[in-house]
Length: 408
Image (tube, rainbow, N blue to C red):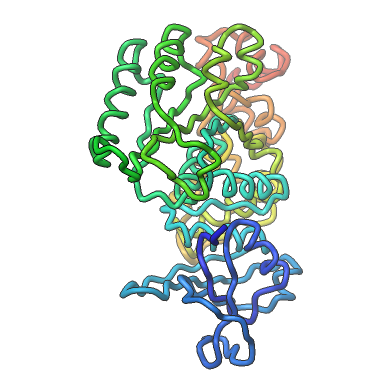
């Protein structure tokens, strides 16, 4: 199978990165004599025109030691001269960043976690075929980002149309899906017999939240859509059929077993990928927190105590919640000359956000002063019911009353 992209790699790249890149469909090429900004004139092996040039601002030993290293990516083809820099935590995150740049993703899909990298590798391979795919995972875990990466990896120039299933009632979602199918087919000019152009792809977001009646209507429409034979699918799309993706925050296998979801609708899709939650991806939390903070405020840094507080929190909202938290931290940061963001800053923002899904976790993290604010917020949210507020926090009612009672 043809690689997704051919990338010219500078001499400072570690061997581990060179092994990882082919796993995600990237062919690493060494720079020709005199053609590498890092002075890599003695290396051989360039047999094709590279699409990107990748340079490293530190040694391979630094990457292996898990020190941060700057990765600079520049496009080499055409008139485009754009550049993008990234601070890599390890070779996996560097491979993900290079892949994201090669696919021209608006936001890089990053991971340093072993399990998540295997999921990414599988997604790239699956995305290049004709399979219809469901991505499952908790809210905010990155399902849509992975879906868009798979669509980009397919090599299709046709559009990806997103339909948010719960945003429509039973009749409206069926009508919207039918209209989207017609629009993609008309746009691709698929009315002509024998056309091999791509009609497009449709992404059913939050499919697990469809009502039983809506599920039946969606299934009827999907069954009427032709698909290409997998045997002829050496690359996507082998015909003008529409490809379907779906995402669900619920385990559809369990929903089928409970009679809450149509087995036929789930089985319309060929494969299911499952994204692990952020709390199960220990290496990703500091990587993503630093990445998003650097994008918002390049001068801001996270102290070790701040990273420890982030690691201790469960993040029920996953990556989306982390991005929102880092955004608030960047806004609250006093300026480029100020101290690094520390544990107290993180806890202040967590308390202010009052994440009702994981208050007991936040309670255990918090200092006594922060617990007082949490208790007041929980009591107000419970309408003054101290017992209900205590249950939300996972504490005894007398303890909550002590914290919420003003001193005499």
